[in-house]
Length: 347
Ligand SMILES: NC(=O)c1ccc[n+]([C@@H]2O[C@H](COP(=O)([O-])OP(=O)(O)OC[C@H]3O[C@@H](n4cnc5c(N)ncnc54)[C@H](OP(=O)(O)O)[C@@H]3O)[C@@H](O)[C@H]2O)c1
Image 1 (cartoon, rainbow, N blue to C red):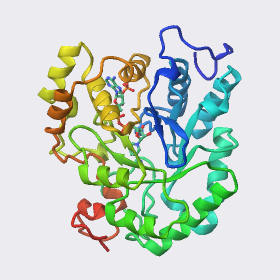
Image 2: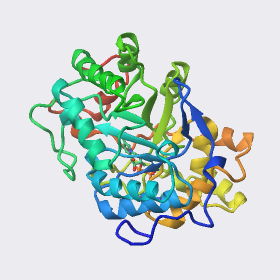
Image 3: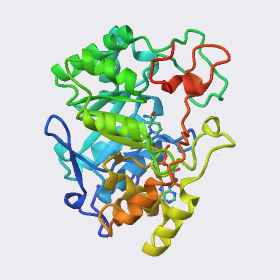
Image 4: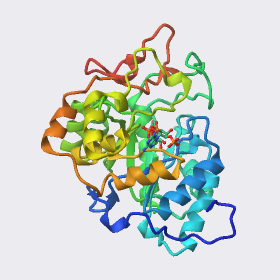
């Protein structure tokens, strides 16, 4: 089934019943499926291929989709979502997230940009809208790691709050049910929590066995924010600009491989099981039916034992993969400056 087929959307016989998928209850009381499908084509999967994956994933039981304007495929995903709903899946059964890109942080841009995403996705409302990065620093899709935009800035809380107020307005207008953050740090979230009228309901952050971010993970949970984990299996096909020689490979870790062998599953499944059992919501990307089906099956099949969970807790390597170099704002800066490593916002 593709978005261009005449054939109507239909549920697959070998899928997972969406009712069996664990759910997260957000601070508002709303429930969100505890696994979603990522839709970032990593500069190599075309919009049509990603949209076909959305369609196929819905057919095997996914109800949560993680989109973003910068992934440049929301129009095609909109066609898939229409087809899914025409096939009998009610809008309320779906959880659709999108994100405000860095070049649209200006007060006057936030609402029109969200409306554009809604038009592209062919939806009346989003379940979740995130500020994609805390910096208004744009980079063109596909640029290399040294690219910088000349007007790049550090995090300026006053400006972030101006964007956030517009995010809050989107909730008041009924265009968005929840708002949230992405790629934040504890010091930045502390300021936002102090000043926000509507607190973030989720924080999207990189999370996989070799990058567990225990402090930020505990901080967001303690503040009633659900952690959503991106690159949950270690983003094996991430763009070249996000690769460095020091990067480690979660799916080749002996602890992960041994558990996978014992359970007779792919190492990716172990990463997904760990994520859901730990309490984050992973959003694995895949365009291959075998893989996205197996990822979803991971959350309804044999769970990891307490010993497995403990063993995986012990393999954190603090190995951030998505370092964000293209968002730096000064010459000769280190990517670590984006992440406030010393507990203070780097200016
Ligand atoms: N907020 C942010 O700044 C941010 C940053 C990065 C990502 N994200 C979101 O998070 C999503 C996921 O992150 P990601 O795409 O970087 O990494 P990921 O989900 O860890 O890895 C995706 C890659 O793994 C492969 N894969 C998936 N399931 C597999 C399986 N069962 N067995 C073997 N290979 C498998 C896929 O290839 P195949 O297609 O061949 O299966 C795909 O290329 C993105 O799509 C995006 O929605 C958000």
